[in-house]
Amino acid sequence: MSAARRSGSAGHNPGVLKQSSLLFLPVIMTGVVVYFSIWDAAFIVGGAPDLSETVSGGKTSQPLYVGATLEAWRNGSLSGRQLHAELGLKDAVIPAIYNCFSERYPLLDRSEGQPCFYLRTPIPVIGTNTVNNPAMLRRLVLSIDVPVQVIVIVVNTIPGEAGKQDELDMLAAIDELQELIGRSFFKVVRSGCNRGCAGGWNTIVHSTLDSPWWLIINDDAAFVPGALRTLYDYVSSNPNVAFYKLTAYQVFIITQRAVAEVGVFDENIWPAYVEDCDYDLRLKLSGVMVASRPPEFSNIHGDPESGSSSSLIDTRGGGHSGYGQRSKCSHSNNRIYYQKKWNLSVPGCGRQLEGMFQTPHGNPSRNLDSWTFDEEVRARSESCWEPSNRVDNWLREDAASYYAQVSVPGDQPASNWGQNLIRLQPEESELDTISEVQSSGGKDDAHCVSPFAEI
Image: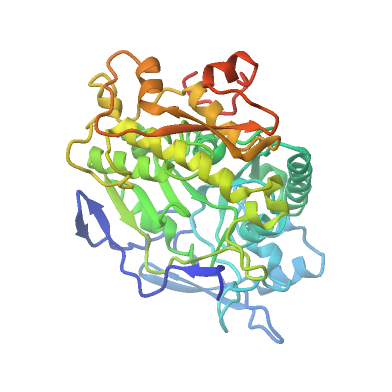
C-alpha cells in the first residue's frame, strides 16, 4: 500500500489511559434526546440504488425515506443547502454528500451497501493545517461523511516565490470547496507565513474558542468511509476524557478540559516535530484521562499515487532545496529546547525520566500550560528554512550558555547535557558568532504565531 496507508482498524480496542492504566471506554449510542444522534441514513451509489433508508440506534428503529430528496438534488431540483434543510441540517453540513456521485478517492472506497453519509449529531469543529497540496485538502474535506458545524483551515505560507504560489493554489482550492459546500461552514485563517504545527493547531482552537472539543487532522490524511459515524457519541459518553489519540497526533481530539488543565501547544517548537512529545509529557504530568480511538475509527495517510506521506515533500520540495537537511536543522533545535524545558539528558519523547523537571523549566511558578514565546529560538529555526541560506553552512551555539542568558526568573538551568543550537547562513556569509549574525540584521522581528503566544 506504499506510504499511503490506512491507520486504525475495526479490530482496535478502545481504551483510556490514566497514568498508564488501561480502561475500557464504552460507545454509548444516545437516544432521541440528542438531535440526530440516532439517525443513520444511507444513500448507496450504484446502478439501481435502494432509496428507502433506515434510521436506527438507541432502542428504536424506523424507516427514513430520503431517496426522493437525494434524487431531486442530484437532478438539480434542489440546491445543496435545500437538501441539507430537507435532512434537518440547518447549522451543519455533510461535505461527503457532494462527492456521493463522483469517482471516489483511492483507499476511500465504500464497501457494497455502505452509506455515502451518516446523519448524526454534528461534530462541532474539524480543523487542519495546510501548506501546499490542494488535492489532499480536497480529499480530506470530502471524506467528512457526518455533519460538522465548522471546518477550520489554517493556510500556512513557506518562504520564497514557490511558497507564495503554493499559497495562491491553496486559496483557490479552498474557494472552490467553499463555493461547493457553503462558505458559512468554513473558517479560513490566512497566516501569510508558516505558524507550524503547534501554531496552526493553536489557531484552530483560538478561532473557535467556545467549542467543547476540536477534531484536528493533518491535511495529508483523510477519514475512511464510516470512520466518524460513532465519534460524537464516543466523546459525549466520556466527559472525563481530556484528549483522544485517534491516530497519535496525525488525527486527535483536544477538549476544553485539556486546554484548561494542560494548555495549548508550545509554539517554541517550530515548524514541526517534538511538539507532540512535549504535549504528551504534559498530559502525563497532569494526570488527565487520555483515550484511544473507537473501534470504528480509521483513516488513510499520504498520497496513494506518489507514495508520499508529506505534502511538503510532494510538491516542489516545499519550495526548499535540501528539505531533509533543513528539517534536521530545525528538528535539532526543537529537541534541544524540549530537553532543556524538562531537564532531559536524552529526548525520551513524551516519557517521564528520572531527574526531569515536574514543571516547565523547573520553575515552581509555572503551571503545565506555561510557555513563553522566545523570539531568538524561533529566529534560529527560521534560518533553517530561509531559501537563501545554505543547508551546509551551519553556525553552532552552545545551548546551555544561550538559555542561561534568556531564562525567565525562576527557570532552572538544565544539567548534564551539552548541545548546540543551530542557525543556517547565506552562502556568502563568513560570520562566526550568533551575536555577529544579529548585529548584521540576521534577526527577523516579525514572527508567525497564534494569538496564544506570549510575546
